[in-house]
Image 1 (spheres, helix red, strand yellow):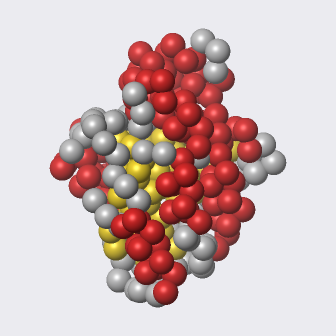
Image 2: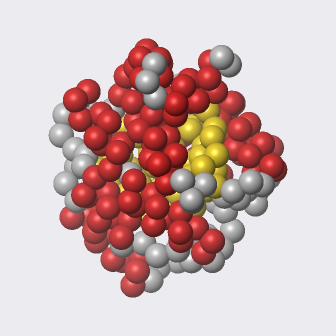
Length: 231
């Protein structure tokens, strides 16, 4: 799949992203698929830069396990939500992320969840990773879609930046209903987000058994495992 335009507005920056997405080679074989979704509204620029810097860990964590195919999804501005094709290496994902600049706007988590649901209906998706710091939509509506993800066997790992208890509770409920887990990270501790992404990637490639094995020596894996199993 080449870059997908999930929103109506177009601009030169949008065209640049879609052109970059078209040029990225699709992964070969049957690598497990993970959707990596980020809030790209204006407040997110520092976290976007952080995610761009640490996302390589997802690929590194799974290289010896057969690899991973990752799709970038982001939302920003006025009703703009886009998805790349699935890519199989960190350099390709970095190139896609560097083609995006954060813009002001409202959250569009519902569109991300619906996109993930539709992708999973076409072909298996092992995990959705959602990174953000706000929820500006009806939580009841989001929870309804999260429940559909749970029925499809697609857990959402919701990683939120900042101390807002309402956001934490909302992300936790989306994760719970989908069968996933939530966790908080802080910009002052970038290793936390990197470790969470690695743990989610391990789950995507090896499931709960792989996460249990990783949890013996990895605090982030233990955190996600506890969230998924209630342990």
